[in-house]
Image 1 (spheres, rainbow, N blue to C red):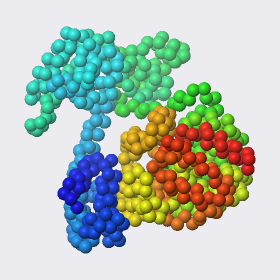
Image 2: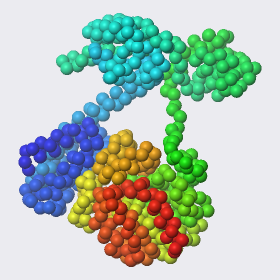
Image 3: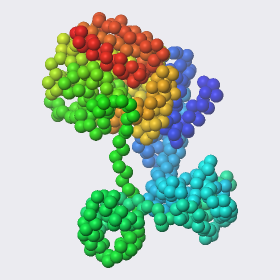
Length: 624
């Protein structure tokens, strides 16, 4: 192994200790080296069994470390295990494992510092006063929400190119001078000034000690306050502190923010007589006799430090010209339904389209859920398709099932179709869901009128079957077949990364997609639906996602040749999640299949061609 490649791998080990998003790159590089046989001194394109065992053990050690953050004695024990790797097994493992141990120590320190930083940030966000940290040039490095709120209320300060400025020229000169002077102080009382903004405000600037590092740039902390700005207090906190009713809490908060009884009466459509009655009750409960006394009591109470609970976010869909029945609605009870199976497990599913439409059951993808659907539901209504998307075990709200196979899903579908009273229906499968849809079509036989496969995943037996796939997915599937323990470790890290940074995950998906997919995935409505579906899929963790990946590499328990119903395959020419040769292999086995190959499309053609897919399904059902 050359020195440059070794240096890159060691560097990735330490980089990944503080950025878990780099784990896929690290494990891919490690897998490539072990595949090539370089670590064992052999040049062989296939993983050798001793190397497989080595990387499995390495995956077990490292995944446990990074998942649980083991104590010092556990790290020392792991160092002893290095000796268990003989030179015959893998010199590469012996060489790299000590770096994993050191990187773990860095990770533990980093996690502890990050936790302290998050706790500190949480406290700052609860302060009822605006706060920002700036360097001696006025560049803002951190600020709380209250500071942003006051800037928006024209307090006399603005951000220009990331630097703090006053809107008044004389104030700005004074502000720059004060920031520079205070930043040069080791200690001191700081300086203060009033601002000439639309909202009467004042600023206090204090020195901020940044430690003894010679590279630490002087910083100051800027406090921004205004008595005229609204106070953000959760009404439920007032209710808890003083025993107020919901209406009394609302009234109290309005008075604290300077509203008169006349204004409150007009805003909430409540008579002044009712408000006066509520106010008397508030005075009694808070032991106050005047409005001014009530305001002071609230503003000096712990209520100011209680974090206001944000309202539930509702995703807005901008589908121009859609009829009401065709719009996606997160609050639609049909998007989260449950049934209980004979073995006691819960199976969750969503329902879309007209209630009297032709029933169709769709199998979601590997990282999908009952929410994995185009936000435009109008084609379902236009083509009279009633679509059900059940969540397989371990996805979303469906209970997990140990040691399941592809064919086990058929038993769940048996019970679901009986629960929904479906005599005959169509099937659809997207991505990995295609294998489950084919198994169901073979199982139900004549009860299935048509099967639509969109970007459907095929079975693979060897790494050569994964040629043309994105390197990350090829590595993950390859490890899933040959080294399941390290594949599980990777899925665990990826799931954690997706949960914490769903936007970043989506950005990586877009970067790796062909131009046609990039265009459709740039739609904010589709981004929202896709991201929510992925997060829902990972609700219970990565176990069942990984299990389904392993299923693709094992004997499916049936052959696509057993699918006797008419099939339409939709596949993108540039799909690198499921390369075209894999789709062609499925096509060759299906007895009654029609292939619709989309030029220039990738794995996400389902979002670009959703109306056509639904329309073709409807036509095929009518012709059946």
